[in-house]
Image (cartoon, rainbow, N blue to C red; front, side, top):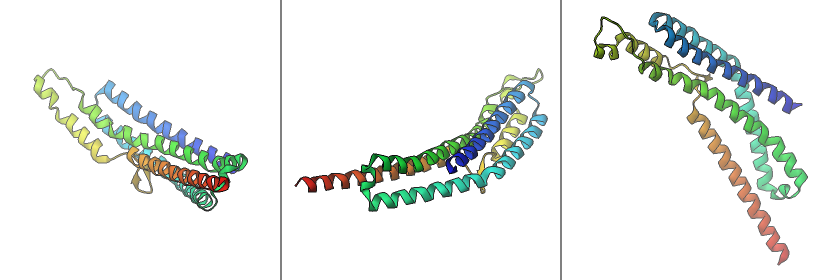
Length: 206
């Protein structure tokens, strides 16, 4: 039952993150078609307010899932560190690993998709900066030094739009650090378990 609830929550998180990514893409596509700077600024204000509102609505679910995943990892680490023989029994190994790893991996994937919203927002300004705003009254070099374009680029960059969890902007770098920590912990537990099991096997034979 708990696994089904976790899957349902993560599905809702992924649905929201995918919708926010699509909204950023639609903003870029519409601005490219119209080249209307004033209208684009209004749309960007609405978009970043939408992203912040959506992230505030589901940030608690990220915190709850993160806390529960951390608690299960600590419990698994404690059990394996004190009783490495748990994984010798295939049934127990499937029970423990199947109880801990799927929720953690799903949470990391959900965090990755949420961080993709922040990364996509950070790429909007460089994308707009590559456009030209042609005008018959301007010379070629003036088109590439368009003041309106530079203004909206700076405006978007300084707005720092993205997916926030409790006031912290979620980025790919943050998620990569979490994945690295999870991988390091898993490797340490596996190494300790295998070392202990092999040592016991050697003692038994001798």
